[in-house]
Amino acid sequence: MKTLARSLNIAVERWLPSSFLFAIVLTLLTALLGITAGGASPLDMAGHWYSGFWDFLEFGMQMTLIIVTGYALAKAPLVARLLRALASRPRTQRSALSVVMLSSAAAGIISWGLGFVFGTLLAIEVARACRKADFRLLIAASYTAVIATQPMSITLTAPLLVNTPGNPFEEQIGLIPVTETIFSPTMIAVSLLGFAGVYCAYLLMAPAADDVVPFAGQERQEERQVPAGAASAPRTPAERINDSRILGGLIVLLGLTALGLYVAENGVNLELNIMNLTFLVLGLALHGSPERYMRTIGEGISAAAGIVVQFPFYAGIIGMMGGAGLIVLIGGWFASASTEATFPVLTLVSAMIVNIFVPSAGGQWLVQGPVMLEASRDMAVPAATVVNAVSVGDMVTNLLQPFFVLPALGLSGLALKDIWGYCMTAMTILIVVSCTVFLVFPLLGW
Image 1 (spheres, helix red, strand yellow):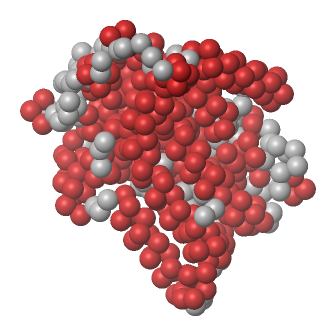
Image 2 (cartoon, helix red, strand yellow):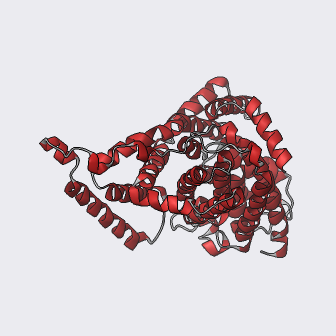
Image 3 (cartoon, helix red, strand yellow):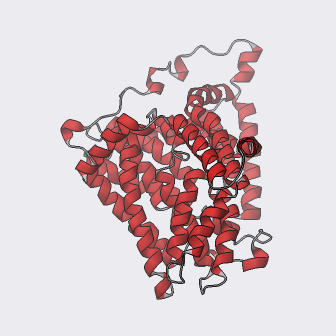
């Protein structure tokens, strides 16, 4: 396993372009597929690309805020001390991997967005504290742990959508409770077996002591800054307003009230908007003054550069995939080749392929879901199985598709090639586990 990981890392370092070039190459490949397989003209593909190019503006802003507000929250003195306390426990590379992967998985089950941010920040702190641990390995392991346990995350998109009254599929399949999707034996088995598999893989892939690449700098940024008490007191009215704890406290109170109203109406539903508001309110409260909070936001904003530029390209790819009918085409190919026994696993495989081009779980389900649900009507395959198969297929190739790893790369300062070899090995394990479960469990009536 260690030899395989090393070989993949060497190949990736030589041949893999940056994540931005990956998006560009994928854009051109999608355009070519639309012309050749979808029968669209070059002008049509250009139109589809532009029509979808701006569709991720809301989602892109949500993910940008997840990064910068999560960064600012982690840099708040109290949270930073808690992270350092947790990160100080590991003394070996093995214990460092265990802490990072278990903590990331736990956060990801609560919310995949929380898992990506919290896991990356914890991995950074663990790498700072434990010089025996490979920094690249910890960042990859943190991201992989969230992906592996995503099938039983309470924020998984498609299962929540089909359990929401008024969703586009209600007339066709009714409402499917989460006991048949997120908390079904199939999804729990995929998560637990997948996590166990990738955890063992990362232990085996861990480089020897002589090959460890530690965190690049031990000194923390907040330790280089002038302590708050040593700074001169605000002198002008403008400076006093900027540093006002009262004004900041009023906004925190307003935010807490809004959060309370949301929970009273919706329960603990950690979707992206409410997570961003939570991070913002807590960060502002823990930093004390608006001025100090904004300084920290400014430090973290560069980590979101990849999202700002690359998300529109992926939106354009989705526009071309949908406009040229490629998603329907791929789903139809697999559905036509399926039998009742193989339909769940082939649905899973088709979702893996589509996810490379459409790395948005909600967007993929809305387009691919109807195709697979229609195909399942002629077979004794429950609609919940289709939802689960598409959700897991979307999850597995997130280790190949760099769309969701951009926040981790931005926060850690690593390049895609630094972690991709580890992710490819983990993805291979998840493919084997997922395909086995979706081939066997439906036959057992689970």
